[in-house]
Length: 303
Image (cartoon, rainbow, N blue to C red; front, side):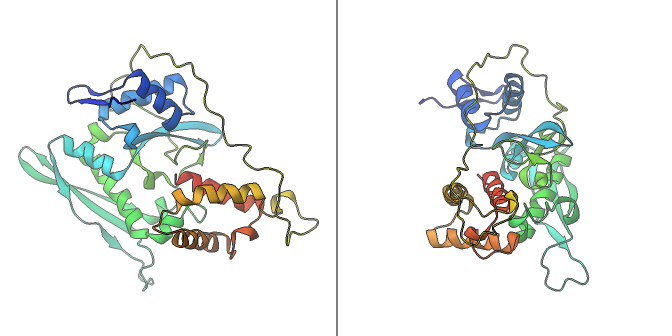
């Protein structure tokens, strides 16, 4: 496929049949035809390109129900705001800390001001994000512990951008806001737990294109029966059994794209740091099966 997605200011993106097939296979394999049509409509409305990872759809399980939302990077939100012609920049985040926290390990709050031209005047739209409401916990909080100021500042900026540009950014959330949400379904990135609504958007195309291709196979069977048995208790429950050989191989496949670094040694070091901080273990082979699944779930979220 050599043609690119055409951008027209008045109508947003135009998708060819090939583009839709590619999006179905690579970006949104778990969506039904109706959900895919809604996603494509939002892409057209916002003029964000899913093949460039400017926008993607997310499914999660929360309270026994599957819910989906649309997710963007913070740069995608800035791009939508800038295209209005009224975005006038933003200020650096301002942080507050607990009085007893002399190390400033992580901020209590981050406050960001976004500026917008209203009637020819530069007006401020300010929002505050609180650590207690966005930190996703130890299981998913590796990047939050590694870069706490960056993560909470993105949440505050996303809040401010939606306050300033509600018509353009309604129901669009950045990943950092959604890290605290429910259990992820499939291989899609983490996202918001609320049902999708179409506030500020037109209704989906009433004549959706038929998509008959079945979804690609999942990696549910990636764990073979080969196990690393050294040091395993003889009578331990199955969830406490040592990590399997298949899990180890799967971790090594994912680590390059999860812990991005310039060298193999630094990639290994970042992964070891995550294992030590999360599981209090000094090596991958000492994890249990359950801990390995947690690690793999985390790594899949970072893809």
